[in-house]
Amino acid sequence: MIKLPQWDQTLINKYNVSGPRYTSYPTALSLSDGYQQQDLLSAIESSNSRSLSLYIHIPFCSQLCYYCGCNKIITRHQSKADIYLDFLAKEIIAQAHLFKNYTVEQLHLGGGTPTFLTAKQMTRLIKLLEQHFNFTRTTERGIEIDPRSLADNMLVDLRMLGFNRVSFGIQDFNDDVQLAVNRPQNADTVKQLITQARELGFQSINADMIYGLPLQTPQSFKQTIKQLIELSPDRVSVFNYAHLPERFAAQRKIKDVDLPSAHNKLTMFKNTLEQMTQAGYQFIGMDHFAKIDNELAVAQNKGKLHRNFQGYTTHGNCDLLGLGVSSISQIGTAVLQNQKELKHYYHSVEIQNGCALNKGMHLTHDDVIRADAIKQLICQFELDIQAFSEKHTLVFNDYFKDALIALAPLIKDELLTITEHKISVTPRGNLFIRIICMCFDAHLQKQINTTRFSRVI
Image 1 (cartoon, rainbow, N blue to C red):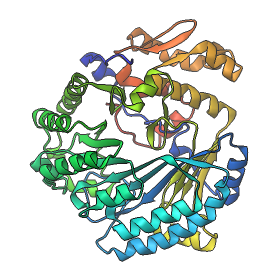
Image 2: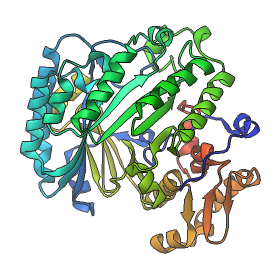
Image 3: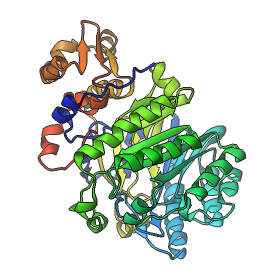
Image 4: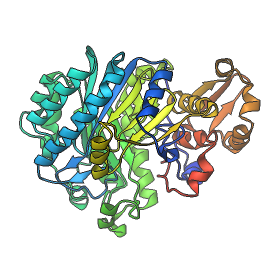
């Protein structure tokens, strides 16, 4: 089992810098223009997998949340979703036949707000996917839910459509905080929905929370986490709010004076760590927790946890196909992304016979090696040097000479240890896993000069 993180304020002050989240390596910042359908075909041909994870992006939200940096469209016109589904259908039909030899192990709907769709629209989408892709009776089907806007009986409809996992975007239970981010919600409604989901037999119930929002205090967020633990979700994500108003216009509505201090923000996460672990949750990494008998924790303890654009996953053997505006695919050693703006997505689907691809990259041999090292560290908090060297036919200390030099001060501060056979992240270093991974990142310096990342804690 992964050892509980140790909080060291001196190290927090020293190393709480900004850096990538490593849902991929190289990160999506390395994507370049000019990728088309032929790149997808080549990626499929060269891939060793015939298992598929499907991601469908639904960009619509009925109300603007001021903190949000997601790709979304604010509207109350339900007809816009019908138009979107028309174009999405063209993309599904065009791409699905390329994956006729694949079996879908995982389906996830994200956004935006996927449950912006009505039951009729959702049924249309799922039936279309089932018609053109090879699903099994055991396929994991997950969906992100905004508790505030969920239609009556929608959970029942989702269960009937085969969904077996739900992720509730809660963020905070405090009324003042919710109003400050334009997201008022009733705590009792959230509790009733989680109870209903459990009664309907959803296999996994997840909750997303955010710390660092305006008007939050260590005490108020501690109470929020206490309420959350009482609901006993299977997995919990506690995200660090990154205030980047120069990038996300909605965040300009948040007053700087209302944001918690850096000290209070860190205290919130420290309290959360203590509360979650004392309640029987395993710290998976960064901002993720899972019950110790959850498949994420089990996979991590067995050294089989993976990470991709959907976060931590047990489906590391799958290629990932993203459908819809802005969606990202990982097929073999290729990363491909659809058009990010809706009008451009519609235009591409229309003139390119269902293809909306725009950006991408092909991983080099060096990228593949470094991606594997980063994945091992960020998922398992250790790396078997001998096994890794044999797998990639290299001399580890020679190949990663620069990385080992960069790791030296982290070793001195006891964030990790390196022996002849193994790299091991210590309990003091668990919280800084992103910084440890940054030492292996050959693309990072260029990206740091052009991009603002979120802080690691």
